[in-house]
Image 1 (cartoon, rainbow, N blue to C red):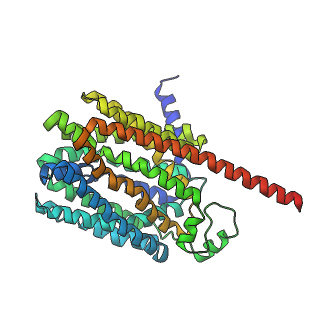
Image 2: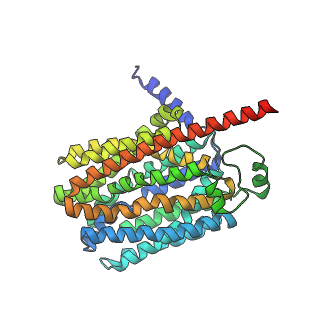
Length: 431
């Protein structure tokens, strides 16, 4: 392999062509995502904020995090309905700005328990925003360019996130109020970018009507939301199986900072910040080559691969006690994160009716969020009883079991598709 700068530049240019020709609005969303990711200070350190600054023990911190996750659910249900009726952009702008504003008082409250109240308010309104954001991304893309577009947006998040936790790791002790204010400023700037440069994307009545005559897997559905859900059994099964990936992945924000703090004391928070920055840098480095290498395998097989990577990467944390080992673990589970992030939403988008996109995007956090919701109290209780190491072994087993479920679902879907093709040929021959 030629290591010359010219050859490296040519290979980089070839890789970046994956993102060429996308809609202009996707590039704007990419920039907004970078800005927002750079300011994500609060949530990666939520466990330590609750335990170190606000004085809650591990079990209570887990319960509070569960309540925070539950606050997201009614917001998402409302947001899905509003975005399908009123439009994506209007819902995003109003509720995202309210969500951002809720961070501002937190910087003035110090160690008051009222910080928890304002964060819950922020999550409630962020829940309203997310279905509109997800529907907008679906509206702007097609099955042909969706994996590239979603990969670019995921890359943008991690380009920003590569610096965010590192900055927050030092702010945590030196100027904790700026965890909240910095987060609010970055999210506000990202919202303004979308407001100015991205048009409304909600499909028109004409587009919805035209899709009804197509054979697309994302054509509009003429019926209620519940009827639309029943018409997509494989999609529903996929969402329920992969919610357990969220249950496992959520532990990088709960068990992992507790483990680094337990092992390394005052060095735990800076180490955790470095691990999160390493995670984001690895995403930036490996996102394009992994997407290109695995593109031909399809979203389902790739999702299963991501689950097995989670099983190894998180499961091995049961046996680690040295700092360099944590970076090795982060490398493995980050590969799983990349593969999952660039395939799960693609599969969902390709099987979602365009007439119900926002409401399906509201369903995702309700179901996928279930894994995140129960992750902290379950793992907190397990860690208290059996220790953090044994809890990581449970996480590895859950990830492997879920990955196997995705493989079985893929086999069932292929059989269903083949059966349909045989029936279609038989009907054509009979005619």
